[in-house]
Length: 363
Image 1 (spheres, rainbow, N blue to C red):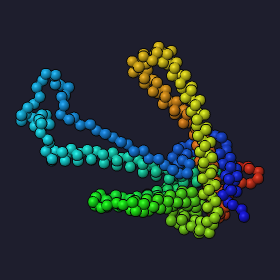
Image 2: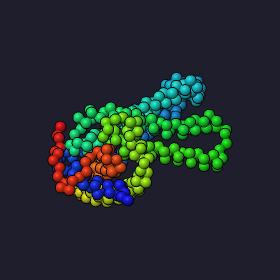
Image 3: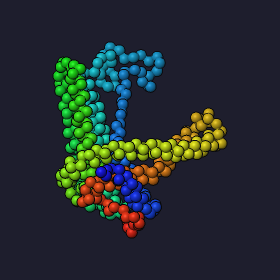
Image 4: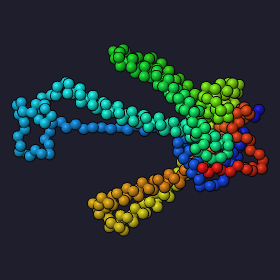
């Protein structure tokens, strides 16, 4: 019995070599842009901004001299509140309300930015699959053509995430409203099992959607639900094949991750060494020593810019590796899909000659 997951390993190598040729700067620059937003496996990372505020606590201000008397009795301070007295509840409520409004506004902005990035990621995901199908690296035209599909995928993923978070939010709200309810070990274990089950189902749905339903949508030019309906019989009829795929896919990602880590250490080691040498020249050759650098704002800014530029250079040098990894992993997934159902093959199987008559279209 032939295992599609194993046969697709070599096919993905051939398809990657074919798709990434020729080595043109503009072609690879577009692929680099796609890889920044899509990433290997379609994962995305959201950063949360923590902000704190400090409120004066009635101590001396900079305008008070050491011997100046403090307000006494019913004297009032510039806030309109008598000194030594607690502000009225209405004022405390207004202050808390204002701070909550600021926090809510910051959270809304961060969530909005995250949603925009997620939508761009989904659009470029469809662009990448479209480029694989046509063997032409383009951005604008496939983005326009696939925008509706990307928007439906974005909505589907958002619904899945909301359904995943809903049980946890309901449990938290219940215990907040019923703080006196005792929680025993049995309840904790049961809750942990339910949480693990919900996260497992959500992960499986997300992975199947990203790795197989999306290319099915591109091949059949359909929506998310229609893509699921088309792919579901394939999955259900070949569970053993896709079970082996999970194992091989995991091993491939593990090996690729190790290789990427080694390459990253080598690249950043070289770049940071060169940056360090330049930094030493600036410290001792230009400013004359560490003490002089510490006393000079210009020197500190210059060293900060050097560190930033060094990190950016290392990141840029690693972008081709990221492009190759994204292309290989994606072509492996679509090769597996095509092996499971020839009608869903995104790219035609490579012929023995390995020739490619298609050329990159430069927009």
